Image 1 (tube, one colour):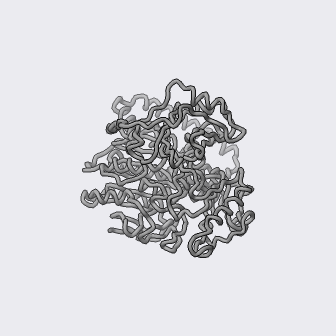
Image 2: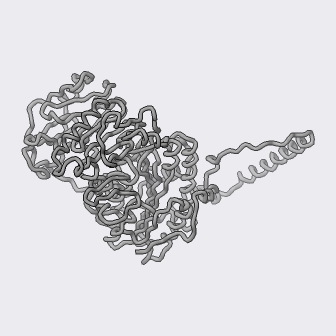
Image 3: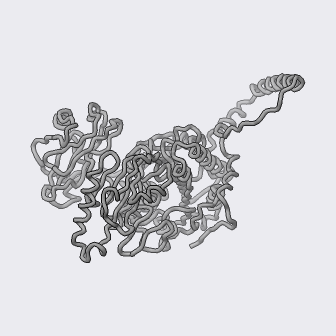
Length: 601
């Protein structure tokens, strides 16, 4: 394995050498003190102004005489992102991650270079991170296509009982990272991979061919120059997969908040990075030779210190440093301290939950790990802990007042991955990428399969659905159609939806779900994939496969149409289907967004 490291020590201020690549319409304006104007200087300025007008008129006359060939040349420069004068046996894939780039940042209209990629390539309405919306879990989800509970990196910091150690961002020993990252998949297929910083890329048993030991002070320009250097290597040395990570605008968002001038300036800087990359690729005649993907791991939320929660105000339990603060806090009960055989732990967990539930409401929700909403896919790892406290947007949860007082961030993330402020970006451009296309939103677990397809290699097992992102492709392949070979019996002849609280409009929901003219038909065979006493619940826009013995939903198929069933519901409420007592659906207060059929699925 080859390690590439900078030959000099750099400081972050060196990023100022990217200023020349910042577009003119985003450059900051500076106030300059003007000298006193005299009659003489005024006359001089007037004469100069007249001369400028005359020269401008001459130039305008000349410009109207440009030949058609010149006009074509100017037009082609506007579409120069197709230029490719290098032949590759396999189209290289370049993946750039701008940490903490909230999707709404694009609405600031100060990133023209990024907008250029959007206009020419494919972009999504937004991309959803995976829960919890933290840097390390999401970057490794992007790399593997696995949920954090499967790939093992359940947070930026956690404790592993088997390893008897805390995970830190610098942890690189075997045993921390599970699953197969895309750089390892590429190597197994006989390709070379290069990674300039990426969570998980320094794990000793999964190293890329070329990799960098993380150093946050490495200038952004140096990172781009190294990417270009890798692309120019001889055929037998050149990596087919290149990944590069950048800390902004996440750092500025944490320190100053997502709505700050500092984030505004960070966005201008990152747009300059893209402008510099485009310039270098065009200089090397490589811009149209590679597939380029620009993405991020999560968004950023403005914090509200008036809503911060300190759990010791509600519970006196001592968790022996196994309390992990944050937008989503986790508690890991010390089994050895509390019980030699683990008995009684459930009582402690229930006590913590019940105490916290008495104080819950607008600021947080507390769960046992096994009762966390299934849509988070955040229960099947002992590293998660025993209690999860999910903060509402702007809330941070601490164990003590001291921890709360030492917290100085104005922006943070780690919240429910479906809230608007956690949404992030996906932009792609290249010879295999569709042009001028906007696709629907998706979750980042789908990226790994796209990476594998663009590299023309077989993907390792993952949580994504193959073909989900074929809409990104210029010439997508045809997916095989799976026929249903066996239908399950109906759970009940008549489905009745009843309310679980006082705010639901059950009449409207029963009309929508029970009196529809066309029912949703299943497209899979549940009996083929699952075992148990299965039956089905057929609704207007969903098909539910239900295990009667376990009283558990095993899979849901459906298409949600928020314009139908949320049009008259403006309050948050919970609904139940009689046959499925433990499966409910929480309707969002904001009727603009549909979430899922059932909040606990």
